[in-house]
Amino acid sequence: MTQKRKNDRPHAKETIASKLTKASSKVKTRKSVKKKAVPQGKPSPRAKEDVQNSELSEENVSKGKQPQSKSKEAKTAAKPPKAANDEKKPLSGKDLKKHFKTKEMPWQMQMRLDKLRNGDTQMRREYIQDMNFHKYRPETITLYLTMILKFFACIWKKPEEVTDSDIREAFRFFEEDLHWSCSYLMLIFSAVKFFFDHTYPKSFKTLELYRQPHPQPIPAVFTQEEVRRIMSYATDIRYHAFFVLVYSCGLRAREAMRVKFSDIDAKQGLLYVINGKGGKNRIVPIPQATIHVLREMWLTHKHPKLLFPGYKLYNVQKGKQEGTTNKPVSYQTLLVYFQKICVLAGIRQQVGLHTLRHSYATHLLEEGIPIRVVQEYLGHRSLATTSIYLHLTHKLKREGANTLENLMRDL
Image 1 (cartoon, one colour):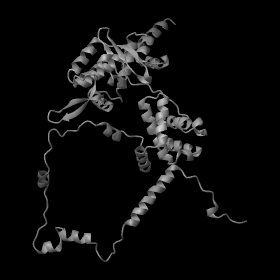
Image 2 (image 1 turned 45 degrees about the vertical axis):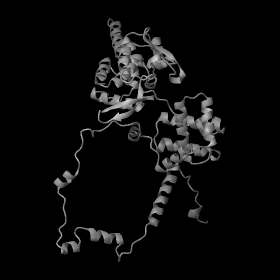
Image 3 (image 1 turned 90 degrees about the vertical axis):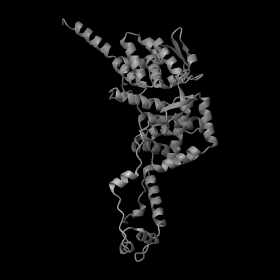
Image 4 (image 1 turned 30 degrees about the vertical axis):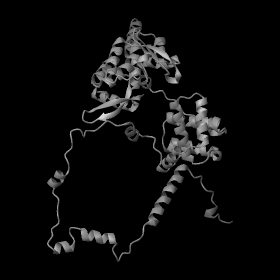
């Protein structure tokens, strides 16, 4: 019998990770080839200059020159003293993205992604136009466009060259190698499916089979005492007014950012939420105390339209921001400030601006407000979404436990 040669073995299918490691090794070998080897007998001209300029060279020692040694006192004296204003500034939106970036891609894919972001093709314009025809919101269009660019940065092929195995390998790479979360995987899956369903119609078996679970974690909720303690640490009237509005009306953070004074009916105590999540409008009650806080805050900027405008400049001498823009304040700015005051208030759990909305719904149910009314205030389509807050009401749990004890007492 003839022995099989090693070259006759079937080649294993190359994965995305192996291709990227091969590419990085090629780059390293190219860099090493470009470096010129210096002969061992003769020192390089750069080395001669270093020896001549060194303080311990033979010429300097023979001339009686002593090497200058900088003491610790001289080094500290050379450094300029730190100014009082050189304190750590709060992280900006870009710094937050760098600091909390968990969904990192290999550097080769990042370079590809940068190239795709700078490009502009007819198919990309059609993809955006299809999403506009489908009445997607601008935020959704931006997310889908980012996700589809990440997908093509991974496979690095033209749409007409994409196969089912490419899609299968790409999602395996996202899930097993990059460890992306379920929500992030479903987001990129939805963007890819929309592209191959509408913009470039093409059927793939993987897109019909792929699924991810939708976990519903129990949201974090503040107690009423914790909410008041957090508000007491919000010394800036702009942030304080924003947090009061979110909690007292149960708004989403981005809904509160877009609120205008024309949306408030002070006489009837109503707030008109325009163009909320899903493009829905709703009416929620607003307390008179909240309206008073918003009026005092508006006097600090007097913007003709926006209630929470972004600020233009940061005056270093006065230590405050001045001037306003025609855009709402940044979400990241509000989030950073809120997380800081939560730490000062002694909150140890992971919280965000949406925690105020969860607390609003939970506290209303604790005080006996019907769940149907709370559903309308929050703008939920399904009652099942609002019923999650029933599990968070400690007061109702205590009352239910006491009732159960009374029922079972005589058994």
